[in-house]
Image 1: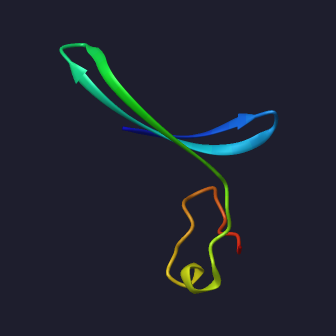
Image 2: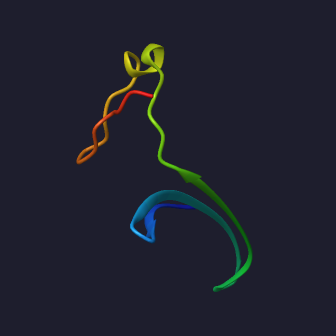
Length: 58
């Protein structure tokens, strides 16, 4: 599994890839993409920012 922040036309998007391996080869991959979004007020109180990131409000 990998998690990435990618930019498309300068706009950041989050990507998660889940890969299934057989021997040394990827035999199946599923990717999920999401635009960055702010957390609602009730959730920012429960969250801690990851190093190098800030929590934005929705």
